[in-house]
Amino acid sequence: MFAKLITAFLLMVFSFPAFAATELKCPVAPTTPWRTALNEADLKKYVNRRHDGNWSSYIAKWERQIDTARDVLGRKKALIIRIDKSRLPLRGDELAIYITGMEQRVETAYCLAERKRMAENIREIEKLGPAELAKRSVAGKRTAIQAGCQNCHGDQGVSNKPEIPNIGGQRLGYLANQLRAFQKDKSINTHLFGSSMRSEKIMLQSAKNLTPKNKLDIAAYYASLNCGGENNKGTSAPDQPESAKVCIACHGNNGNSISQMVPRLAGQKKVYLVNELRSFRMTKGNSSSFRFNNRRHHQLMSAIAGPLTNVEMRELAVWFSSQTCEK
Image (tube, rainbow, N blue to C red; front, side, top):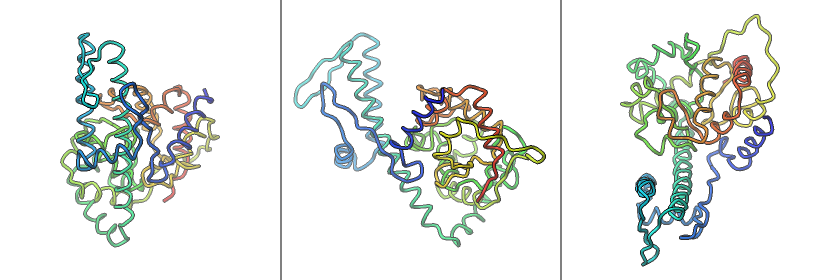
């Protein structure tokens, strides 16, 4: 079990160092019988030239093509593709290989789009000085009250229900990113490389009408509050479970992350943490299932949570909840 987690950890540290930075290392769409490998420079140049730099447009085009190809494959027909100036019919195994190649192309495009968006988000946040943050916090409090955030998350961002997370003192970038992710119509914002795809009916209703300014204001308000934490008085802190060694690479040695885009886990609700790990586990290898209520998919988190047992999830939740949240 732990060997699998270490493998995931190595992938995370060496292939995706941008959990603590802005740069995600994106996969290269490999060579197929019909085209050479697509590296970042090739893809960026094409999207800038043919789609005016609009990654959503490019991705939507290829996702439509994938859907068409799957339909043709299911009906055991041939799909005509254009190679240079020639037309080539593909069917059966050849068509299946072509579909895989398109999926790899879209995966690379999603990653590049997410990397661009994440960098823009972090730059936007880093430009906010103390005066601007204070101004946004005041506006965010009003907007949060209007949206009814306190009904679930408490007046100070500390919920009184075990399944609802504390958000007081949470990372500003993470909070803003999650509000974007709940607006599922924003396809790039809910991709597996970024804030993660997630689905939760109540949050969808609460977030769907928020403007970009509203989301950043609300995030600034809750980030300005003191950290909430589980009431662990009278209990001794448990030993760090072995499986936590994977988590701390991104979430920090004691659950206090240093990245704006990675959530603090220290002092978080135990039940909430277990539920989220299970949500990630349910979407391992199947990002489409995130559309069901209370599901989440993130390429790394879903892979890491996939092999975890219920006991290990509980151990992680108890340990992180016992740590002190530090702003």
